[in-house]
Length: 254
Ligand SMILES: [Zn+2]
Image (cartoon, rainbow, N blue to C red; front, side, top):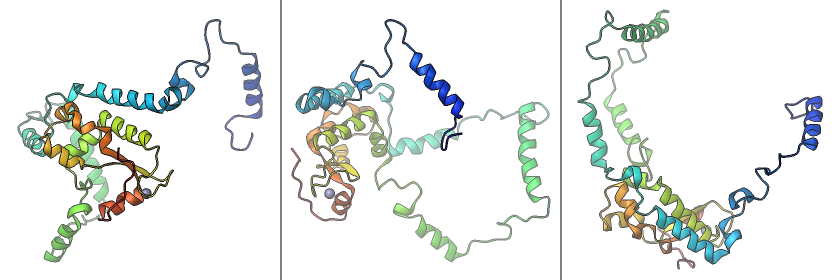
């Protein structure tokens, strides 16, 4: 056995003999031989030059514009999320009206759940919550701990809609276009190869307000949100400093 390998020496010999003798059938080429850009591993920039690539990337974004597909007509707002949990209350669960006597699944479920609880406590183990009462102090401490960015649902202080938009394919295209435009170089400190962010010159949340965006479909259809002139790359450090109020000296905004 060769160190760090999962094949024996004999298998490796056999594989390399097999490889040497192997010819693709006529008319077929290896998956990585020739073929399209993707297979050759070239970027759009390498294939078409920077100017043409920029044009192609903007066209890509445009092709996503208005193509909201699944999200069309779906309203995604905080109100919607709240309503969703309200709506669930009216749903009839699958096991309603079924009893242990009439349904095998109900019987199995109950048996499975009581068994584990029984097993857990069969040695006289007491529930840790038994007889425990949260004091005012604990309650206060918990509510402090859950505030703002410490809360489990905290997403950089942005709304659920904003967060959902950031997960859209078109958002990713926009981000990529900015990276290429500025060549992964921080437009403030000039560092390359640092953790890089695509930063909105005019805040994205303000754009959402300005254009009254309340659904993903609307976001996808609103061209102004996807203007690549509204973005620059910033390294994580500079981006954080900007968030903390340091003015930045952006050179590549155009
Ligand atoms: Zn920087």
